[in-house]
Image (cartoon, rainbow, N blue to C red):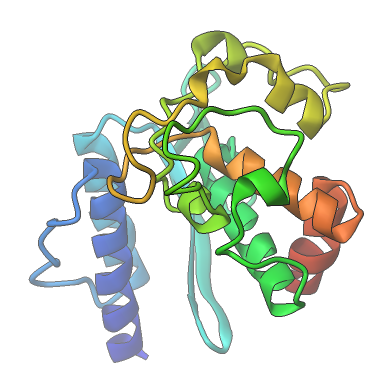
Length: 223
């Protein structure tokens, strides 16, 4: 059991280091912990170093959950501890669910990642000066190589509108969706790409994006 925890802990700590430090060159821990207590202490040290109040963590293998718990605080003002059930804002982790949902559609034959977004989501406005020779594909939108700038601050300010559909959101401020270089040649992190792919998924499946993700990703995973 200890060797299993040691192996999983090493991988987990490496993932945490990469996530918090933003570097793909983070060194693998030389002496990964052999116990849950040791893992908690190592994670607590990383949180403190990066001034992060707390985190909820699950350590799993192919057979299921080995351990789930919280480290640090969920709410500093209320002095509330983080637990395995603490809810955090999902943030950009939602892009993983976006990509997973799209790949289920690819496997079902509903989408092809090489399809230009002009064809897959024709109601989404964008500008690509290289459209005739280098159209933006669904794959490029997923891998952040569209050349688009990131979405604007005022777009973030609209995300709490419960009545806004995906189409409404994409129509709100299309000015950020302009390719600044030939698509597919450079990677630049961009929040504008995944919603376009989500819209293509809606069109291909005939369902709204949330319903498709619920039926094809979340429910099968028991989430």
